[in-house]
Length: 345
Image (cartoon, rainbow, N blue to C red; front, top):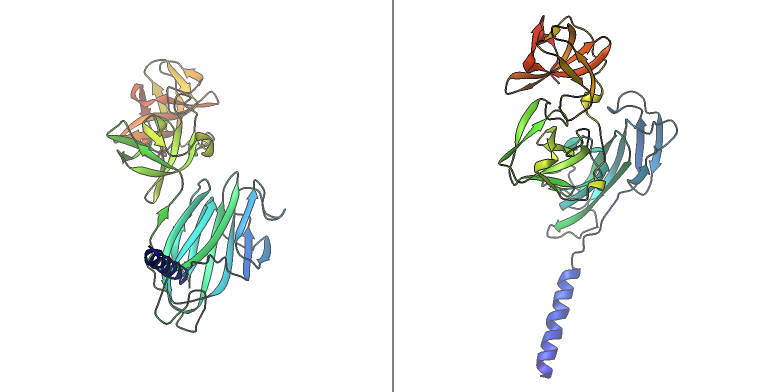
C-alpha cells in the first residue's frame, strides 16, 4: 500500500513538473505609441497622440480618447516593436468596432467592420528577435474598446518561453482564426436570404446555409414583427430575418443599428419617373410591415430615385411625390426614363 502511495506521488510530481515547464504568459507589450484620427480611414494628420507604456487595453465606453477626437466615427493606429522568442504565438485581440493587425508590415488579421465587442484569436510562427507591431482600430458608433495581447504556445529546442534571443526578423505567417463573438445560426429553413437592408423588400445578396452559424454585428427592429440581424458572411455583410435565426447570446447584447436605407431619403432626381397603375401607398422603407407616409393616385407622376432588386427584377421603387419620399411596390408601376441609372439599394 505504501509503495502504491509513493508511486502515485512520484507520478503526480512528474506531471506537475511537466505542466510547469511551459506556462503561456500573456504579454501586452511595452512602449506603444497611439495616434488618433477624426475619420474612419486613418487619413490626414492625427488630432491626438499619446504613449501607452503598458500596452493596448482600453475601454472608452461611449466616449473618446480626448476632446479632440469625436465620440463616433474615428480611427486609431497603435505602433511598437517587441522582442520575441522563436516559436508559435497566439494573438488575442478584442474590439468594438473593427481592427487590423500588422506584423513587420504584413497584414495578418483584418476585421475592419462594424461589430459589437468581439474577441478574435489567431496564431503566428515567429522567429527570434525584434518584430514591429501595428494595431489599427475603427470606431463607428456607441461603445469603443480595444485590447491586444499575445502569448507563446510552443517553443523551439534550445529556447525558453519569455526569454528573447537575437535572430532574423521576418515572421512566418501561418494564421489560424477562432471567432468567439455572438453568432446567428439558420434554423427552421433550408436557406435564408441575406439582404442589403433589414426589410423583406431589400435587394438580395446571397443565401445563408441551414445549420451554419454566422458572426452577428447588430440588429434592427424597424419591421416590428421580427428582429433583423446584420451578419458577416465571408468578406460581405448583410441583413437576415430573425424569424429563421437562432442567436447565441441574449438579444440585449446585440446593439441596435440602422442601415443604408436611413441615409438615402435625400437622393437626387436623375430624371427617371414612376407612374403607378393603381393608387399606391408610400411606405418609409421597402416593406409592407413599415408605416405609410403618403399615397400616389393612379397615373400620378413621381420622381424615381432608388430601387431594390430581387431575382433580377425591380421589387421596390423609392420615389419622391409632392416633396414626400417613400417606397412603392414596383410590380404595379410603369417606370420611364434612364431606369438603369437609378441606384440599386
